Image 1 (spheres, rainbow, N blue to C red):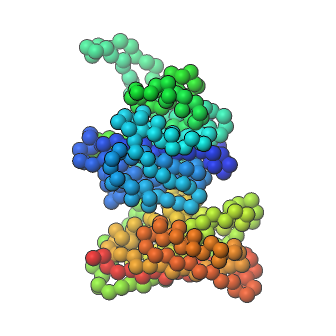
Image 2 (image 1 turned 120 degrees about the horizontal axis):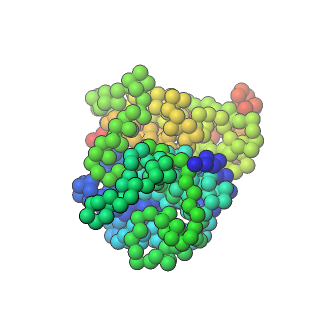
Image 3 (image 1 turned 135 degrees about the vertical axis):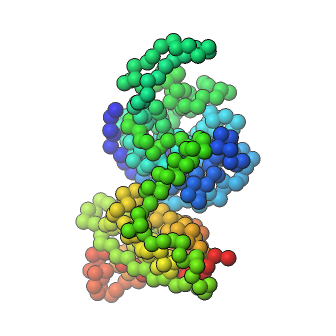
Length: 413
């Protein structure tokens, strides 16, 4: 299988991701839509959107939810991120009808990635492999894993009719990527059916489907045992006992308010072609900041202030270089995860205040936009202000940016 390069930023601007979350999850036996089923305290859909909502992948994410059921609306709204338009649309009675509804919501998209919310632990790298193959010229792409078991074809009486050559078999996953216009035609020609695999529709229409490398963690959560497997995998990905403090301890802390301080510093990258993300916003034309993630000093300082107030470690404890899944992660994503950890530890967030020091970017015209973006991520008021250092020090020399944050928490009621 080929290993394409990640798609470019210009390619992402012409790409949409459709996350199919309209299934009822009958086999999970949860009595709720599958996307609402909790995994490590959060809906399956929230985990899927952690990766899918990324401006480096697509400019628009459409979440297809169960028709007539608004219980997933809050999860969709909470996934909003600067640079990505996240919208929810009602699905249909079948998966095929749901994907068609998602396609109808993005008529201008040139490329589309279709992803099942039930494959909640799929990595960014898998999205990038699919998007990269599309950008390289493929019209239909699926990630696939080699099949390790011998497969038999049987008739209706359970009698073996043939044994396919195992080396040529692949178990396909999502996201599946397509030329959007060809996928629209394939769906239109098969309207009224119920095909569970969009690549199958493209095959039937005569398109060549390319397979890229899949991954074990992108399994589909269908049965209770799959949910247990996902819980175990997430536990393995969390920091070990030497890397993180016991998050249960703060819940027993005295009942008064708790204040935390956070400081973060990042230097500007030498490469002027990089992009700046600061205060949850993209700053076109500004050189980016260095760091394990995206270098958003404002968001990072806010995270440290939250962790300090809750007494559950610091930024390095939770998102440091020992956590490869956070390499390149946005500051907004880290802030959202920090807020989840703090609430999980037994606290409510009253407010967060951040001040950054730097010669650039010019912040005042976008201050309200930054406040709104970070407040939406945190689910609590966040205010950001900025100042210069009158030409003094690291910031005054234009070498980088520093940020200081204060967070106020109260024990959860």
